[in-house]
Length: 191
Image 1 (spheres, rainbow, N blue to C red):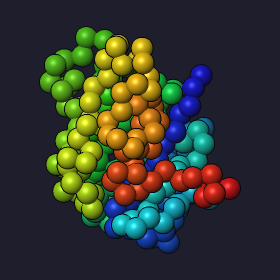
Image 2: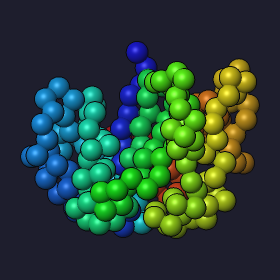
Image 3: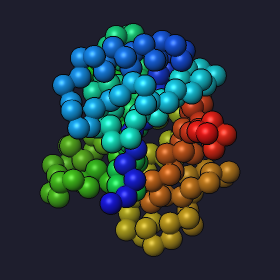
Image 4: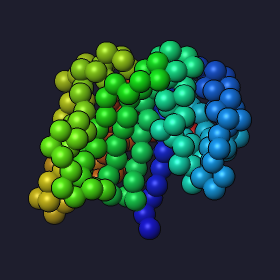
């Protein structure tokens, strides 16, 4: 089994407020095995908000993002790396999903309805509007569906000059995060 990772971007939210949201969510959680454990989550201050790495084995990232966006009335971006096969996001504001992206929309469901498939295409302008601090054109190329050909040359094609990871690599999420102003923590931050 590959890497499973859940993270959240809390736009315009400082670390102490992020930690409080994590604690409040943990108290109301019904999960046992895959619960969010606030003290095991890692919060990183960024220029325009907080980046949160959720605890290992947590499967409540999406629920936490929806909760946090409803509690503070601001944008929260949930990010997920699934089995080292893909990365994806869901954008929430005031508890409502505003946008979502997955480079392999039918990963879990063959024969997905076209409307559902298309709903995972992501919208750079919505990201710009809700998260802010960058222009849609600086991230729109990350919102590309991955083709079989891309998997043949994993590092060959990248969304933008200066990116470390190419299409068909789940760590492309790190390049995306850097572009939106919430860089994935480096070794020095992770300890």
